[in-house]
Length: 388
Figure (cartoon, rainbow, N blue to C red):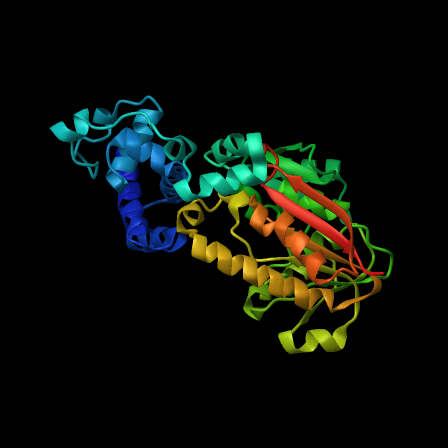
């Protein structure tokens, strides 16, 4: 595909997303219909689409329209490129710009457009981050880093670096966590690399790694990952601690790949069905990586930024409270409860922690910490409580 044909494909995918189709579904559908597109073409179209979603409001302003065509026109103008060389109509390129499109478009004027953020989120973001709100919003407009976690049970950091290099993947240590490596070249080769297939490295954001490093787990403790999903945080903990690892998720199919991942990492994890959790308790540590807005990860899933509504945020806050109430009852005397989100919003973080202690005053908070959207990691929140 030519560069112009890739832009036209991105326009089509973006229009499907703007009509309500989830981004991944829209991209998958396009790829299935476009068997002629090679892996580099699919990657380029995906990059176009995701960057347009990260910067949807500012690109719409620059392009003069909130359509797929307007967003890609805005993207070209933002990059300082001559749109007329892409919008030619030749060889599957977008149709030439008409007179209106030639004259339409202007730099984003209002705060929401400059920040590429829904207007209703500006206030909550400021309430949570204060003077750092704008910096966080602008950071979410950029592409996320690819960060790996070294499984030090299998390889040292230096050994993992060399193993990755053999497969053409260049990395550098990331200061955010001792086992974190930022990929600088060859990110698309990671999943096929020997280091990944052998369990020496896992894909895991730097902030998530740093948060798991903070947790103190006694040797032999019984640890339950209550909202396990794919189990990445359990595997991170298991790489540095000897304990009994158990995992649960309200939707068990989310854990479908966890047994294979654990086996690859050399870890034994017991997956519990929802009805079996109480009987398996109590636990010395219960980790709740709760469902949330994911606002700290919107670089990776930018369409979620535009799907979140005040009503959905309220639903998530209520769900988080229910999960915490359930989880705290599973902790043994003297045990710990850890609550984590990848959210930037106070409603899901500090306010949720305050509400938990108000409902259950017997708990004592040991730690409360945020990680910002930054070079090595996404926005992340962690609080840890002790049961007397």
